[in-house]
Length: 93
Image (cartoon, rainbow, N blue to C red; front, side):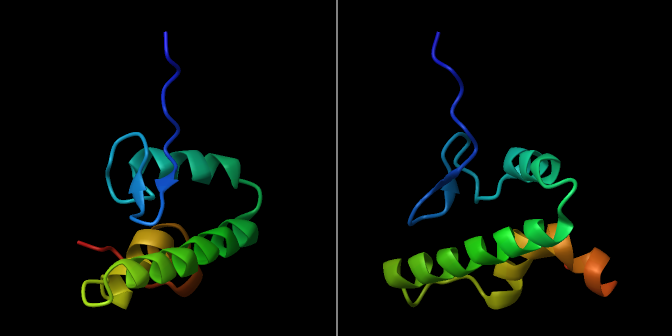
């Protein structure tokens, strides 16, 4: 039996390796939240680094079709750091 694939990003397209949803997918968000449960600052720093890498990769792939900054913020940071840090809801929907 093959072990399940981890919910990690496939670069440079930033889709989940396991479910093909935009990374971080729901499972990756849950997993990361658990991993960083005792290190909120490290969690936000990690996600900010991933956002930076994603912007660089996505721009190189197609500079005319990079998601808007608010969408990228919501996808990478807003769900985990935005509302609790600033008091503002950064829901991508």
